[in-house]
Image 1: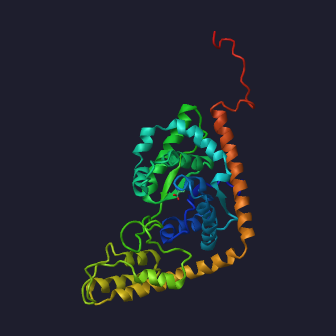
Image 2: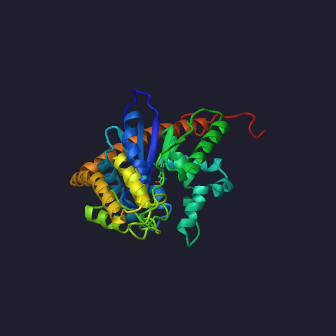
Length: 349
Ligand code: TRP
């Protein structure tokens, strides 16, 4: 972490609920590898946020902290220039959340379309956990603690970033200060990758994901079972590429754009079998993912090194967050011992 150059700050991260998949890769991970050279980048492993809908399963979160870190390192996140840290080990974030909760109304949280959707998807049987309902506030704490300027997100997360910006404006107005920095969403040009079933977004819970750590055989089988154009029955039939998951993946991963556009034309014209296109996709994915798998195996050999990376990143993050928390408390005039309360002769009289 450099303190001499005033680079703009990026905060990004993931809930450690499973290994990362192609949806994460396209929507955010590969962008982070480039961003780390131009910005001061922090990556939060949001275990506390993951617990908001996994309270009864901390073991799952614990295990996935490691998986996610391995994924980061394997794709080329460089821990020397990117600070990777664990959310719950920076309790300053929880404290900031506490104060921000007073700056947002329950009605406003209820209106957040991202939260609404996510609540619907999760079908909480015993009611929505309050922690889950309030996670945009905790995310505002994560973002503002690092005075992040930009948050790389998919389109579906924009309302959460807007909510953070609102909290920042409200804080600075309420306490008449300029302590907090308004974050902006940095939209990835490829924000939604459909699942292999071609239906919703790729996600672990829908069972339609290809993982960064999948081996060649698994990739091959998953691609084989992929949804294409349901009206493309015979090889000679003209096929549709719009909404066709195989082509959407090729668009995202195939670097040979010229060959791809010829492939698309051929498919649309008719005479191109789904299996031919799928074989192409399998090759492209294996070519992209096998160096990542190799790197991952290499890093996995030395778990002590991984833990050391996380520990160092978390210490650095804690230092930054503690500084912001102190500024926040000063602005709110609740740093009672460093700014002692004085006797007010007119008080209560
Ligand atoms: N909400 C993000 C996810 O679902 C994780 C996250 C927590 C995050 N805090 C953040 C992302 C702050 C960006 C900035 O994966």
